[in-house]
Image (cartoon, rainbow, N blue to C red; front, side):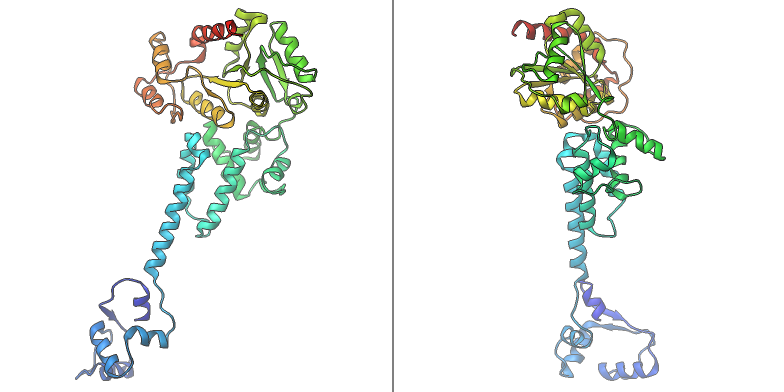
Length: 391
């Protein structure tokens, strides 16, 4: 009876047994039965309550509490645990990192299918919070993995070592983000970390730019200014961006492209008069993100354009999440306008939501055609030409 009442559900009867002869006689005496019950009798709660009351034992609840101990409410406990799980998954799916990079919704689904860590919502949330903190810090700026781990995980250089739950969770998120297989070897894991800017060195991590007429006499300013005045692109290393020296930049627009060919065509058309351009060369590395933050800190407004395909949409969402960039010719209208002049186009591949325009990916899915950035070069260069006249 104690166990049944502790379930938190209504109780009308209890099945007992198997009872030995002494127990059957005791039950018959308690309930005033004129014959011995079966070895597995069913006792109605109302009859038991009457018998306990007549014997001066108070209520059944009081009696079982005195004999066995305090009653539980397992139904209420289950409801509490269900509410905690619901709150946990709601928190995860609405987290800013997930909301601004919708491709990671697939990762949240994976996390949910794995269930709770050791059955604990608290431990699960702590692990997920740690993973989201690491993802928010990527791409890294060319740090070795232990150095990066110590920086983002409270000084612990081993927090992201191979074999840790946190490392596995972050790598799965990165494989979802970059649309690559989940790494199944040490070499594959190193390559994925490297793609996210971890363990890159200061010199091989570079970003292309053009038309950056920086003020000041620091190394960064002089390099960018010399190349801009010569009508050439500049390749800036992460080391140079980490120690830029004295620099400044007038508060004006900076346009960002995904593909180097667009930057090359802009230089061919405008030469030394090229407006400020930065190229991410696909997924932005630590050098690209750092340069964009340096420019934004000086008052530059950032405008991003990339491919209208599945990966291009994910890259755009990533750039806009990691920097203050806003879309440049990246709306549904821009896609349809460009598509009208691009009759032969490949499939866009796997599509995910575009946070800046909810109708964009459904429209792309309907037409099942991609529009590469290069096919929009004329429109982009016209925008840059208008920008140049307002310098």
